[in-house]
Length: 347
Image 1 (spheres, rainbow, N blue to C red):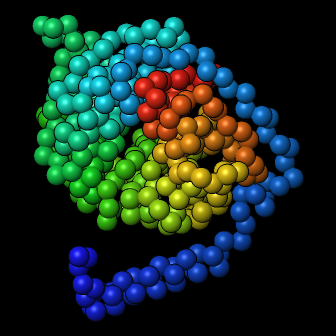
Image 2: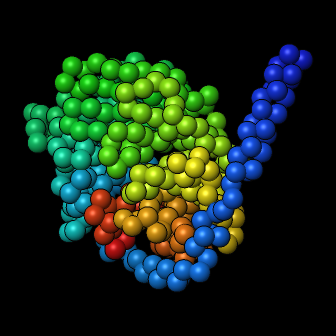
Image 3: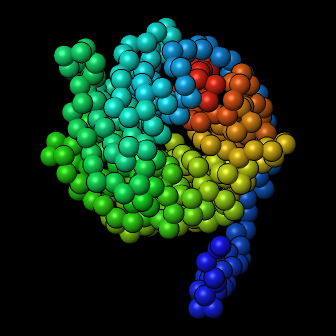
């Protein structure tokens, strides 16, 4: 039986809804233009012609996460088969296979330097591996196990070899000093699971997306959000900073992708697929920021022209839902992974 609705709770909920509505109205009052209005007379962006350059086979279960290294050549993938694989995406070869202590991986991250990878998931911890050091079995050496999470680890990103930031199902964000193995910050960030983290190009701020339908902008040194962005009507599964650092894109369970402008505090564009049948699990922006790519439950990647708000096409090939998408730092490739056990590199 569902819990009885407390009249006080109902009152508070109504108050909250009214407040949100008021904020939204105030925001709409000053929202004079959308990206589409401003860029309507621009030339159409060329059709994106990406094809699967490499089909990376090696995992024997669903692949949940992929992330490019700072060299834009190597990528790490984490799968429910209990393995992390480091790939050379140029040749399609496996560089390393790392057996995990827990197979429930939900997030992987490559350090920009290419020296370390991190992973975590339902084991409620974040494990850091040093790729340049091997243990007695020949696998990459565990250098840190970051414990103390009260929920699953949903996202992690390295700032550098010494610092990592994580988001988890206990609604918290943690900043870790890896040399000391201690948290330098820990705070409740959202009113629901933190699902996604994206660092700004200058690595001074970051955006988080959450199951509470909101996105937040944070300063790395602070425990209070600088801005909160509403607009999505369901979980925000993925956030991605625009290369300019002045905006970010999102992919959500509500079957839309959106562009939020940080300076004007506005939702400047909403991207809808031609057939809205499934939600988006992941998003990425091209090197120029002109295209937004969203991995979907319908096993394709949808692409839009961000400025003119036109659907540019789909990348098809995967045979099951796409779980994660990573754009190479140099903008030359996109890696996607899926529940079909495969990883594809699109060039």
